[in-house]
Each structure stands twice: as C-alpha cells, then as structure tokens.
Picture (tube, helix red, strand yellow):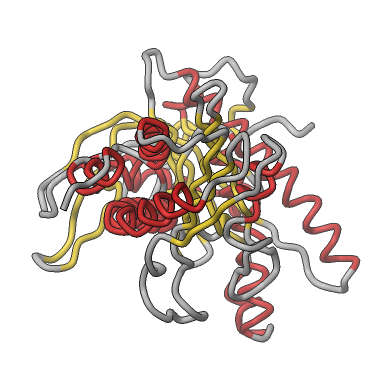
Length: 374
C-alpha cells in the first residue's frame, strides 16, 4: 500500500512528537505537502483536570504559529462538565480564518472508560479550514489522516493525562520530578526552601458539630485561599494534611531572600482571602475559620519514601518538623502568623520579635517573629 507523506509520517514518526503543538504543526505541514489547501487547523484533547475540561491547539497557515486555548469546566458541580462541546473553541476560531467550511473528525475513541463521576473522556477532535471549500478527495485525505492519527494521539493523550493527574495530586514541580525519576525508594534530593505550614483552629469542634457536606465545603474554601495564595507567589503545596497545608518555596538563586519574601506575601494574601471568606460566612450565619501559619527556611529531603510497593513523594527533615512545631505556638502566643529566626534573617520585610521559644521535639530554642498588624 502506497501511503501519502501525511499517512507515512503519522505511522512512522508522529508518536515521537514532544507535544500537541508540534504534532499539529507537523501534521498541517504534511497535509499541505500532499496538496490539501489549509488556512488553519485545530486539535482538541479532553484532559482529566480539576479546572480545565479541554485543551485546544490552533495552527494558522499564515504564520505557522500554534497557540493554545483552554476550555474550563463548569464550576460548582460534583462532576465538572465542560463549558462547551469538545471542539467548540477550535470550530469557532477556524470559522473566523477563512470563507471555507470547517471540516471536523474525531481521531479515535476517548481515553478510558466510565469513571467515578461519569463517562470517560471525549476522543481527540481535529478541525480544518481552507481558503476555499475542500473537494471530496481532500476531505477523504483529511478523514484518512484522522484515522491514522488515532494511535499517536492516543499516546500523546495518555502522556498528557498522566502529567495532569500527577500535577493535580502532587503539584507541578513534584509531578515533574516523579515523571523524570525512577520509581523506587531512596530517590530524592536535598533542597533549600522557605516552608509554610498552616492549619485551621478549632476544626475538630467544627467537624463534630457540622454535617459532613458543610465540613468539606469549609475545607475546600480554606484550601482554595491558602493554596491559591501559595501558587500565586511561586510556591507549591506538597501536602494537605487533614485541615493543614504544607507548602514550599524553593530557593532558586542564593541568597534566599526572594523565596522568603514570596512565602511572606503568600501568607498575607491568604489572610486577606480568609478575611473575605469569614465575612461571607458570617453573613450566612456560619462561624469564621481562623487559622495559624508558620514560616521557616531550611533544607529538606524532597523525594520518594514509603514501603517497597507503595511510595509517597514528599518532603522530610528537621526543617519540616520545626515549621510544624512552630505553627503549634500560634495559639499560645495568640498570633496568626509566626516566622522563624532563620527566615527572618533573610528578608527585608519588617517583623516583630517575640523572643526565643523552646519547640517540642526540637533541640535548640527558636527565635520567633510575627508580622506587624496592618
């Protein structure tokens, strides 16, 4: 069987494409070489993401550039629903490029079967438009290309899905480390980072007095504010521990002042967000959600730990123990935010000294600071 340039490339080389943008651009180039007049092309993949329902890559013949559009899931649903049909973004964009009619094909089935919240993901969608309407022979080649593209797109979708799932559960940096490293214990590295540990005060009483749905709603609202602030300032949430959060701001360049300042700004943003949330809860007749947070600078071992057949990717070390113990002083010192002397020494942010305190399980006393009240 004599294959066109497009089909031969899809069989032999497309599976090695590093990403969807490159695959789409190369596919468009081969189609043009085979005589299909293209003004633009679109590739849409469904992704298992808490926020994003679909990712669409858009190629324009005039420039050869590929841009990406995101289709966000509808908010407030237990099972996130896409904001529109899988190929809606690509179809709309293509229709504005040229006077021709948009041609669309599905390239194979969706990834996976039914899950906990409903059916599996939609199959990859390919869309095309030309400077004029496509002939029947050209449409036939586009349909053949979609069929031959099913295998490389399935492999690409699987890679994207794996990355998206790991990022959702581990965070972007940790997910990248897991994907790049061997799947075994004793794999990790020592890094320096500003650490943030925070948890809600009085959460045990709240969880015993409120219905489970209300408790989960309160936890989600709290995690949205604290994790959103961490991510906004370049940090990464490593763990949700009950109602607590452990996050890091890795030191990229010495001295570590930038990481320390980012952690302080994240805590300030979280406090502002929680103040707005508490005001809204009071308006609904619900109790506020006070919290305590501690910041520390130190070295952590960031990597795999666990049983031989069950691993966890996390951070451990004396610095993690210290920041957790330091947060435990928030209530006795009647402070919402506490900062260790190690972090205070590396930031120009004005802080208020609270003396030196003994932390449970920590050999050396710790100089403790707090942030001034605004």
